Image 1 (tube, helix red, strand yellow):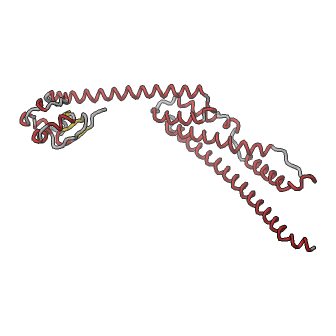
Image 2: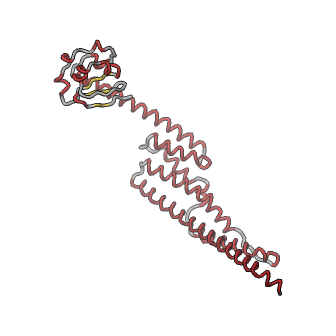
Image 3: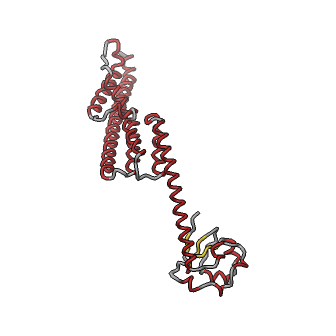
Length: 286
């Protein structure tokens, strides 16, 4: 009796510790199941909004890119969490025997996990294997091959997402999207070159229309070729503030203050700039 009384505080402490551990495990299980349900609802809502948006604007590259990210996140969530829940639900219920009474709490914990998993799976309407194996994300990724209104920057972002889940979409699809990205870059570069050429042609026609001296267009660095300010057509410079002069940086620095005041009231020291009359500055193409 005396020994029992001496050990009573330690026994009480052990029981309280065990009870606290049980509460921690219960709280952990409740937190995990709550997060799993919240993530599942979030993925469903995001998918619903994005698919509705694509129904109204089926050629939206931005919405398709966001849907790709959503399906990639869904595949990761189902692989990490839902598969585990399915394994827990399909496990055989443990039976407590006389030889395993010391592990009774562990058996009850497993049974609770199994019950939570069964309840969670009952809320699922998605095809788990289809999502985990990348079927959904692959369907979305394939649409980037035929999407008409897309630029190289958006397709490059999509390719970056697809490469992060290469094991789901496959190397062939990645190669096809990479090939289309190269084609888009070539088309955009050609379009930029055409726009640059048109701008140069418009500039030349504008300069030719005002009959400007050749030194304004050639960008010569020799100040001797710059005429006196009295030779500059001031009237032409004032017409709608659209008369354009091209002077490179060295030539502009070499001019006298008197000549610079005659050419334009403001000037920009930089390599190859367009200086418009009455202080209006427009950058030239690179």
